[in-house]
Length: 298
Image 1 (cartoon, rainbow, N blue to C red):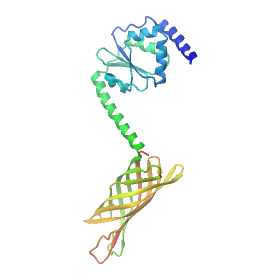
Image 2: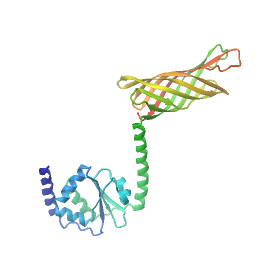
Image 3: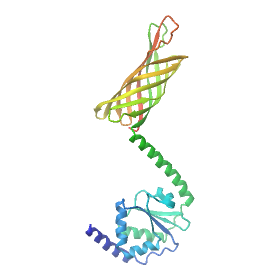
Image 4: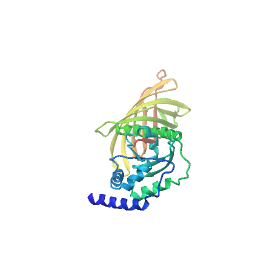
């Protein structure tokens, strides 16, 4: 550690003495240094400036002010520019953004940044524009925080589309078999300490002869194991639904092969309520469906 400080001190003294007198800050610019002791390169910068009066003088010439990114106060609007810390941000007297230097490699790089500010010709990015950028950045940060909190709490969302074969069972004479489609979304909650997920969400089924059914499944999903790159799961549960002025309810089950954020499943949906209770014949709905699902959070 001592050797490292000595190297930084010698390099700083040599470079800054060579560069001394080359910067003067004729426009009275201000440089903000975003960083704190939790950032390694910021600690290196502090060691360098503490061991060189020349570098300290040049920093004073450019009105350098240290800003803690965890508590930036009035300078929060400049945070979107700081991709890593420390980040040196040059401002004019109106607070307009001019340029930045990300990170601290050695004193020479910082001195070069200072010297370029004297002849900088780029158009400033107004303070008002930075405020608008900051608002958009904050929205993105909050969205990311909500997503991370959702994952940490074991909450997930699924979006599904599928197609297959639907038919009636029982002693019904009518023929309503044919192609069926389904689409839906569901909320999935992991039960901590287990391999079990509870799932619920609406689905819309398109059945033969232009019949539509709104269905609400409530399922349990159990993780079975992995055969790389596939995670195997099984889903089973009950559902309630409504179609053609009739209520319906039943059971469903499926085997699920998950790969990354998607899964492919083959399932069976069985209705248990007679669709024609007033008739002499009975009929029960059935679907065999192959589906693909987008799993948000997996």
